Image (cartoon, rainbow, N blue to C red; front, side, top):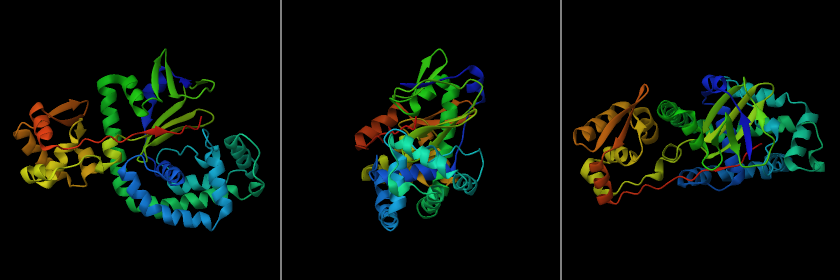
Length: 334
């Protein structure tokens, strides 16, 4: 397994970060994979894959570069640099374009674990990657970015509250189930691959959520490390909770939508992000559900979370509401 050695100061200084570039690269990986992990990803792929594949069909060199750079268990480093907090996407794309061509070719060789295809023995690989990522952002991410940003920010609220409730160990164990774990003795497992441990004590550590539900690790030497993770299932796939017609008739469609999501604690901002309803509407729905004894409030640090009561669970069970899970996988760079 791969793991990082940390210390208390590293965790105290660590933070969550929402990043448009990382979301764009995660979307490129989903397009490259071509199959979704849940219905929300499948719907997005149906809309976006034809245009993406047509672009690559017209540019076989870039198509080969993507296949080679994604590798099997290691992403070519120059494809996915670690952005600075708050830096615009264009700045990160400029850094990719400025990559030394020799270094880019070397990164792809590492990803392939073998020789570089003859067609990629050229100096324009960084420019090709930057152009493709700019296209992925413009055509497939930016039209949805406002909604995605809300979802990602809601996930950060939930993770921050989880730190307050259970400490960093609980958060790390939940980021990429089966991949990330708190091992004790200040050791953070980041994947299940057999790689040498890294001592990152004193380094900058950030956690970056993405809506396509796969993650990776990345770093920028010296001293900056990131763990990218798929955000919580109900947030990543707003369609994962079905609302039976009977429950919608009883409570109203909007209120029933909020109600079925509350099988796990969510904040008001999360509910706004997931449902697409306004803050005032969500607040009114929660007040009615609270007064009816169907949900209850819990405070976690500075956040107020809502969850169904036992009576609420009985109502959901009687209505036959589904609670489908959104599976999470991982393809780790290191």
